[in-house]
Image (cartoon, rainbow, N blue to C red; front, side):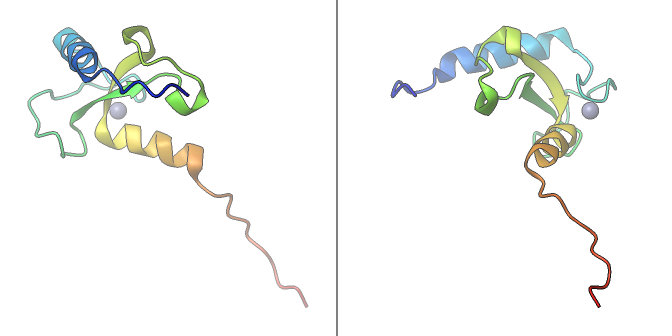
Amino acid sequence: MSSTPRNTAQRDRDRARIKATRANCHICGKKIDYTLPHLDPNAFVVDHIIPLAKGGADTLANKAAAHRECNSKKRARIVAPIIRRSGSLT
Ligand SMILES: [Zn+2]
């Protein structure tokens, strides 16, 4: 891991570029309302196609538009514990 701080100016630029394309959500394929406030579940967020934690690059090529909710569901799926349904142990 590098100790260099993330380049937030670059990140803002990538975000603006993705927003300018008015792309559909890359997770569910539906339209994104780019005018929604950013905390709205359907608001636009920048998603990493390959998560940074899995070695994805923090570059425009690895970023795509997504709904906030789709993005958090995707994250939940990656970290969700496996819930086993156990029967009676008698
Ligand atoms: Zn979506």
